[in-house]
Amino acid sequence: MLKEIDLERPGGREHLRGALRDGFFLVRNTVPESLLDEACAFLHAFFALAPDAKTTCRVAGSNGQAGYTPPLPERTGAGTVPDWKELFHWGAPLPARHPLRMRYPARYPDPYFPDHLVPGIGSALRELHARLARFQHDVVRTLADALGAHPDYFTDMLEDGPVVNRATWHPPMDQAPSARQVWAAEHQDFDLITALPRATASGLEVLVDGEWLAVDAPPGYAVVNVGTALARLTNGFARAAVHRVMAQPGQSGGRLSILQFCHPAPWTTLTPLRVADAEPAPQRFATLTADELFQRSVYGINHLTAPPLRTPAR
Image (cartoon, rainbow, N blue to C red):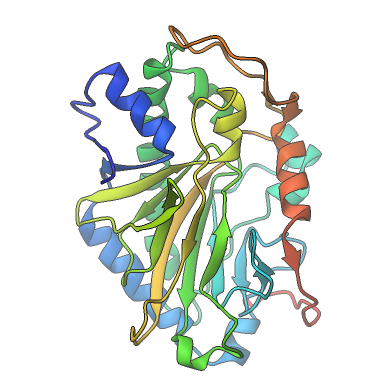
């Protein structure tokens, strides 16, 4: 069973630390269920469009951080074939002359919304992004306090960070190109934390003591998992849990999920902090910047050759 955290009554320090050591936990969500329903309806409509229409929504130079990505985009983690999924990403813009955008342009593409194809989608997705970001900031403030750090320790490194939303459509498995495909192979996220509100179908699993545990966010909750950036910042005290997305035998239909990756600003130096009252341990990780960790992790994802990108219609 996953530990539960209510941000208004988060429980004692040991309860929160136990959640961090598990690497996966449930948090009572502050994002309205009605907004999730609205966003899911718009995204269902988008993914149901003809492939040629969706392809016009690819964003050149976005490094997969904005707009549409067609099926079979990447091989995740331990996967030997591309995941059976298609993606849509969006975030919040930074001013053109912001130093982070000038220094790391690939991490800060302009967000793109296909309102000409699905009227109203942009407004709903912008609002969802903002609400989820506030929720994640509340989560990391609570976790910082549990670790003996200042409540603003993590929110400071998240200021103007490339926080990215991902909508994933996993088509029915009977449409997959081969029997070797899965929705998403086992992997770890490489951000600080990831928030995953309820999906439209089951399939998310986390590896616990060598066994796969099915995980579903009930209404009113989000699953939150630890990424490798947080694991490095805590010298391994917080566990970047291994997880995957698998269709169950006999499961028909597809699966739509929405998540938000909470990345520190690229210029953040991931120096392990001293966790208050924790047993001393040798330093496990070399110091990297958040961007160096991101680039190293992205390199390990096998992006397959795709057709040339076209500038999306506005």
